[in-house]
Image (cartoon, rainbow, N blue to C red; front, side, top):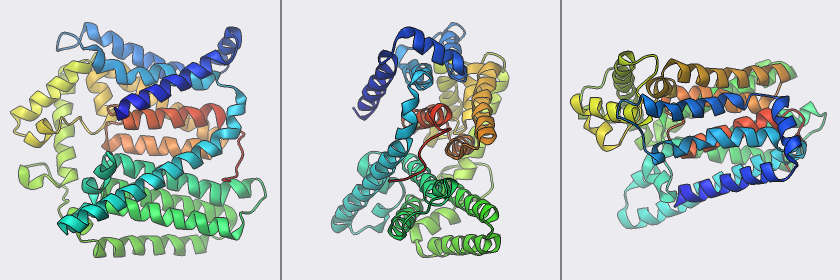
Length: 392
């Protein structure tokens, strides 16, 4: 039902973009910038994989999630330029919803703790599932919110020669600290590392640009120390980190070792890719071949959890062959180059986030992540060049 509401909202947004202006105006806007063509071709290629799918063909429900790639990018391309002034409102709304979800999760976990007295309800999937989300997805939303708060609070205003009032700085800093604490509670080791990396790089760059580089080094050192102290004093997170080793998965004893599990999955999927490297196994064939490989290797956790490759680069190659991988990389680096060339920091932050996350997760295989990344990447790409830099 949650995904249905997500789909309905997306359909209404796309319909509004296409119906609010004459057809010739929409066509003219589509011709103005053709970045939207890349995800559309990606979807069409996936659709045609039905004819060489190793399982004999996919079902409609196997491809419906990818319709986001077909409809949302063109809708963003033809949306009126007035959408620029609403970007900050979209970011604020997203941040507000993320904070609300985090608070509801904590309240419900506290209620569960009152019954079970098990402190683990405040961590990882136990915490995120209080609101029906995966811990990694919610951590991603928290990271995006932190990056946008950093931008609007400490870079965007200065770019226009204005300063935030003192109470807004306090509010922004408190919200960032809360979301950062939430990421530590959610205990995704990869997201914790990525969050600290984003914050450290942002602060160092800001310090270099604004002329207080030494102070920025001191601040980032304090962030690292705070992170170490947090890990040391959060028993469940400390346990999860201690179970992580750079090794290949060897059985149930490694079920909490995210690195070992991913190394095994990447190796397993790479072997499947080499069987059909040019065209791939297709949408359904790729999933079935992956699960069959997990079963043959005794990776029961992957079979029961219906695990993907946990790497979107490998996932695209597995399903859509070399053309699919090339299209995925083209989409990423076109957005990245545009962000650098136009100094579009919001686009740069979300694209860097997407590229990094795709190393560790199959970002297109879950609607929560697919909609999130595609919506904001194309929103910032087409409407992020001249927007208001104010948060409120």
